[in-house]
Amino acid sequence: MKRTEDSPRVIAVVGPTAAGKSDLGVALAQRLGGEVVNADSMQLYRGMDIGTAKLSPVERQGVPHRLLDIWDVTEVASVAEYQRLARAEIDRLLADGRTPVLVGGSGLYVRGAIDALEFPGTDPAVRARLEAELEDLGPGALHARLAAADPDAARAILCGNGRRIVRALEVIEITGRPFTANLPGHEAVYDTVQIGVDVGRPELDARIAARARRMWDEGLVAEVRELEAAGLREGRTASRALGYQQVLAFLAGECGEEEAQAETVRATKRFARRQDSWFRRDPRVHWLSGAEAQRGELLGRAMTFVERAVTA
Image 1 (tube, rainbow, N blue to C red):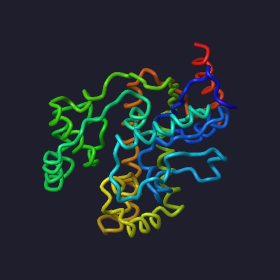
Image 2 (cartoon, one colour):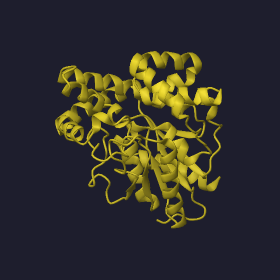
Image 3 (cartoon, rainbow, N blue to C red):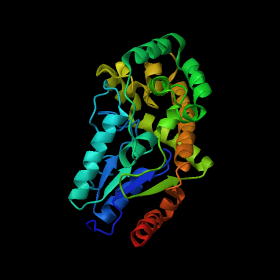
Image 4 (cartoon, rainbow, N blue to C red):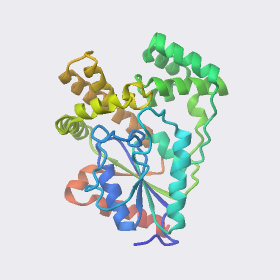
């Protein structure tokens, strides 16, 4: 089914990791005659398949997926560059009369794609100084500084994500305002229906633990070894990805393999809570329970929001 003039222009499927976004995105794209546009910051990297739960070609069920596997693991992620690429894909699909289905849990990437966000520039001197402090003091000390300057930003950024902490502190220093103050209100550049997928916390925690075990069984350690040879350890963004960071520590002899898996589960649970908090602050998101997928009801419920937007 091709998109009509009355159809919502963009669908965004958002929410915490392991809630069921990817499968719903495929189902919606099939129903609406669209394509999936990736909004998971780590699925942009080539070779990072198992640890990011990237859908296999079979699981994509013939639905084209855009913005997967576009960067080497040595490349530093840029939300501004992602914004440019995502909007190009969205505009291409809209021009072709097809529905873009944006799928992912990277909140700033989703907003960068669909909202009127302009990202502050960089100051090489400020960035170099902050990165030197990160090297000397570690991310925890800089995260504490961020928490004092901008508590909302600190809650949204993991305390171990040194790159994002540095960027937030850089923006604060350049602009003289909190990092989150540089994010405007919810002003969309596309007519978008946002559908949030979540499950109860005990079930989500169980899903996260099961996913980690499955990733290990499917060969995550071997995947990380291969990527390490391709420069993963030097990649300032990719090396910090959940699961990959922990396996790199194991391969360096800094912890045991069981400890690496357990820490992956703990860190992913913390990250899922931050994702949920981020998207819950957006009043435009229509929430569904991922548990409904087990009863085959999730797609039908999601389509009610799409159809309601059409008739509104």
